[in-house]
Length: 351
Image 1 (cartoon, rainbow, N blue to C red):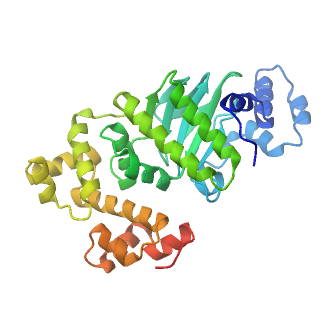
Image 2 (cartoon, rainbow, N blue to C red):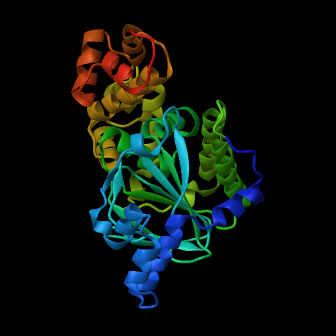
Image 3 (cartoon, helix red, strand yellow):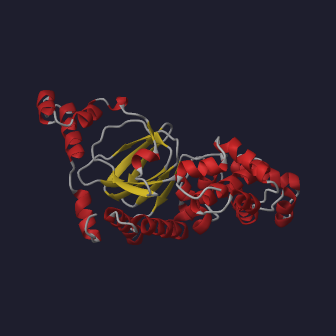
C-alpha cells in the first residue's frame, strides 16, 4: 500500500516515464533513423517482452480478459496508456474508459478514427477491436477498466438515465443493437478530472476499503456525466428519433420487470401492441420477450453476485412463477445454472 497522494502528486507520478514508455520512444527513433537497431537491442536486451512488443506488435494477443487486467476482488482498475506504444488491434471482455488528462490521443476502430483531446471521456464497449495511439511527451491518457457486471450494476442502481448512455449500456447487456463507443466531451471540467484523479489515488492505496470507495466514486462520476453531458454525447450510427420512447420503455421495464407484459407496457404508453413492439425493435433491435428476458437475467446476475438470496427467492423476485423455468432460461443464456454461475464468479453461500 502506498501513502495517500494528493491530486498534484498523482499528476507528477503519472507524468513520470516508465521503462516501457522509454523503450517505445527509443524504438520510434529507430524507425525514424535516429537510433541504430543494434544500439536499441543492446540497450533493451533485458526487456525482451517489451522489445518484442515494440518491434512486432502484431504478435500480441488481441483478446484481453478482465481476469488478467483487473485485480481479484476489485471491480475497477486504472492504468496509464503508455506514450509512443505501437499500434495493435485488441478487444476485451470488459468496459474500457479512455480519459485524456493532458495532450491528445487517437483511437482507431475498424471503420472510425477518433481524435481525442484533453477532457474527452470515451467509453469503449466489450468485444470491439480498436487501437490507441498516445503520440507525445505531454500526453497523459488514462485507461479505466471496469468489469461489465459492475458497470451495469451501477447503471441499474444509480444512473438509469433517459439518454444515449442508457441505449449504449443496455444494448450490450441484452444483445440488441450494439454501439462500439460513447464519447463525452468534458473539456476543462475540473470536477470530472478530479473524480478520476481521486479514483486513481484511492486504487493506489490497495487497502481493504479501496475497491468500495473507488466504485462509489465511479458511480458519482457517471452520475455527473449524465447530469452535464449526456445530451451532447456522441455515439456511432445514432438514431435519435426513437430515443424518447425507447427510454420511456426501458425505464418502465426496469421498474416493472417482475410483472410487465406487452399489454401493460402498451397501456402505460397509450400505444397499440403493434406500435409498442415496433418502437422496442427500432430502439433495441430486440423483441419485447427478448428484451424483458435480458433485463431479468441481468438483474439475476447482480443478485447472484451481490446478495446471498436463494435461487428460489431470486426466481420469485424476477417474476418467474416456477424456479425451474428461471434455471432453464438462465442456463440457456449463460451456459451454466445460477448456482454454478455464483460459485464460478465469486465465493458465496450455496443456494
